[in-house]
Length: 194
Image (cartoon, rainbow, N blue to C red):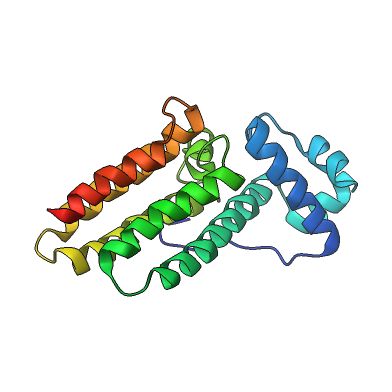
């Protein structure tokens, strides 16, 4: 699968939703490789046959897990960006504030995409485009926002904002800073003021 190709997605039945909900909890808490299909099936209250009939493979469950989190993140972020209004600086701030809110609710162990990349680094894995696509999308978002702040320096500003954002996500997951999103946001505001 190429880097720009969309992965195949599964139509969700009630049983498939239970599998995915169980897999999401287990993958995020314990890691993708540490969780087998037997554990997922048992947690979801389905047979392995049902799991394989719906998803075909553990790899497809990983695709659905990551794609679902990405979709929910984009939805939350869209609402925050809309509420921020038209000001470019306010929209950049909204991204960091949305990440802080998301991480407080869904991300005690850090970014699921970064965590998954530690386990799924093979570009041929069907979940790889979900992981890299989410990060490319974030860079594209920061680039669009940066153009509204400083058209001439947009690429540099976007890369810096992306690094601040990703650093905050990792630091949050590791727990080495008391408020990584606040620190990243302070740095982002300084950049936006110059």
